[in-house]
Image (cartoon, rainbow over all chains, first blue to last red; front, side, top):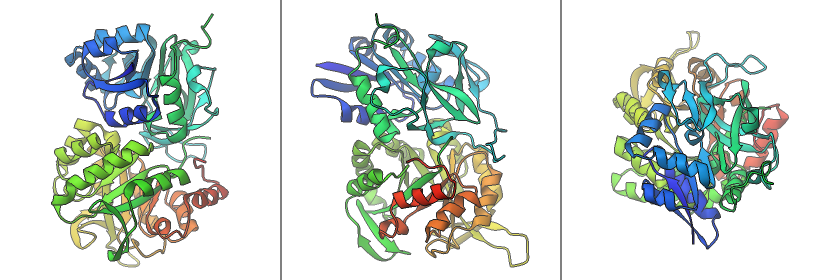
Length: 220
Length: 257
C-alpha cells in the first residue's frame, strides 16, 4: 500500500485536496491528512497545500514543528506544493511586511499591486480569482495529457518571482506575466488549485499520484 | 488571453434537496444536490453557489452533509451561503468541503465578523453577499441602500460605502444582488453593478434579474462584473451554461471553454 500524505498544519481547506486525491488514486494507494512528522516521513508521496497569509503559514509550520519534515520530504520524495505550498518554498514573501520562507528555491513572492489594468484600461481585481490559462513552459510528467494553455482555478494576491528560469514549468498572465508552476527533481509546485480545476486539475493530480518523482528534463 | 469571466449557477437548498421556485412561491423539488452539481459541472459551470434557504437552524447539519457529498464528487469551487452567523459556521462549512462562504445578514449586524472570519480563514474564502435596493428618486443622483431579510428591511446603510468597508475588512469577493431586479428577468441593475465594481479592488459577482443571454453579457461589459450568477434561467432549462458561454464569447468576453 502506497501512502500519500497531505500535510495538515492548520491552514486552509484541506478537505478539497484530500477528496480530489481520493478521487484519483488507485486501489493500492491511500491518502492521509496528517500533522505527524513520522507519518509524513513514512509516506511515499507528500502534498503540501496552504491558504491564507505567508506569515501565518510559516508560523503554523513551526508551531506544528514541521519545518524539517517538509524540507526533508522536498529533498527525497514526490512532492506537490499547492498555492501557499508553492509560495513558502522560496526565500521570502513581501506579505505581512516581509516573511522569511523555507528557502528551498531561489525566488521572492510579491504583491500584484492595486494599480493593474488590462489592455482596455479596466482595473484588474486583486485577488486574481478565477480560471486562467497556464502555459506549459517545458515538458514535465505532471503535464501529461493536459492540453497546453488549459485553464486552472486561481485565487491569490501574491505571485512568485524567480531569477532561476529553469525552475519554471508553468507561466500565467494577469496584468503581468508570472511563474505559476515550478519544478526541480522530485518537487512540483503550482500557484493554482488543481483540486478545484475540474478535468485539467484532476489529470494533474492523477499524474502526481502516478509519478515516480523524476523530472523528464533531468532523467538520464 | 487572461482571466475568464465566471458563470455561476446558484442552487437553492431546502432541507437537503435542491428546490426551484419563483420568489419562494410554488417551490418544487428539483432533486439531489449532487446530481445537480454534477450536471452543472459537466455543462461547464465555473463555480457553484449553494444557498441554504432552510428557515430553521435544525436543518443546518443537513446542509453540512450536502456540502460534503457535493465536494466529494465535484471538483470546482463551491460557495455556501445562508445562515452563516459565526466563526463556527464558517469552519463547519469549510471542513465539509466548501471553498468559500457567503456572509450576508450577519455582516450587517456585526461587521467585525467579516474581519474575524477573513483573519482566521483568509480573505479568499469570505464572500460578502450584499442585497441592495435603489432609494434615490428619478432625477436624483443614483443611490442604493443595503436591505436585509430578503429585501424587506432597510438598514439605512449606503451600498457603496458598505462594499468599500467590506473590502477593507478583508472580504475576498462581493456577491451583489439587486433587490429591485431579483426575480424580474429584466436584467441586472447595471448602474449599481458598475458603481460597486468601480468602488472595490476585489472581484464582484453580479446577481439578480437575469432573463436573457444579453443580460449576462451586459453584466460583464456594462456592469464590469467579474462573474455573473443566475438561478432560474438555468433551473428551468431555458439556457444551458454552454449557450451562455458561447454567447458571451460572441460578444468578445473571455470565458472558460
